[in-house]
Length: 252
Ligand SMILES: NC(=O)c1ccc[n+]([C@@H]2O[C@H](COP(=O)([O-])OP(=O)(O)OC[C@H]3O[C@@H](n4cnc5c(N)ncnc54)[C@H](OP(=O)(O)O)[C@@H]3O)[C@@H](O)[C@H]2O)c1
Image 1 (cartoon, rainbow, N blue to C red):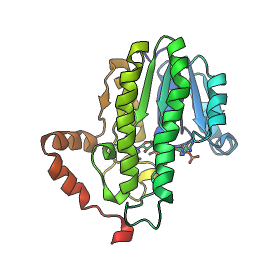
Image 2 (cartoon, helix red, strand yellow):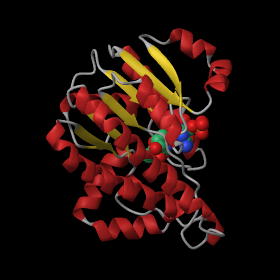
Image 3 (tube, protein in one colour):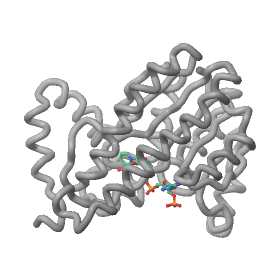
């Protein structure tokens, strides 16, 4: 689908990749962008200059994606959407065994998997009414292979990858394209403690918009992600062993 004149809803837009996607959409002729975020007031206080500099028609929408009432209100407000970008996510950097309990793993599953599924279920009829449109899920290279440094996060992103394939099949008949983006480490708050070369949020935003235009289903944009895809599909066990060396901090 074309970005020009599209009407998008993006989650987790007060910082990081989500903010870069809103900027890119607004600068690429989207007719309207609903920018979902948990704390609009804090964002307005801290980002007045950013908001003034934004091109296009951007409306801030309060939404915690784990709250079904918030999702329902968002659907009421944004009934004209034909592009849903599920970007909001969390990474607690906990290992599967090294973590003290299951709370952290459950929370990652709650946000990255269940809440994203709830968004898709709520917006699927809206997309259908508006001609099909597209859904983009921001996955991760950790959807393909487990990084024990973020073991439970990786599991939640693998679940989201499977969900992406499943809803793609279920929504084909209503003409909705479903796109998965698999970033490597990107320069945002989420990856601030990862000390390796990182891609930029703007690069991910630009690549995501290009993939929507081309209706590309599995999208690898930054250098690390492109390399990992190549290595993974030629020798998955070797990639698993290599990633397995990045152990969670608590395990030493
Ligand atoms: N950075 C990376 O290296 C990397 C790599 C691969 C994939 N990703 C994925 O890219 C996406 C964006 O991450 P980022 O790197 O931009 O991280 P980030 O800077 O930590 O931003 C995460 C965003 O998600 C929002 N969020 C978290 N829980 C939420 C909830 N329950 N409801 C609504 N919004 C919620 C945050 O809002 P608050 O400010 O309110 O917390 C924030 O806007 C995530 O899905 C992440 O898994 C990131």
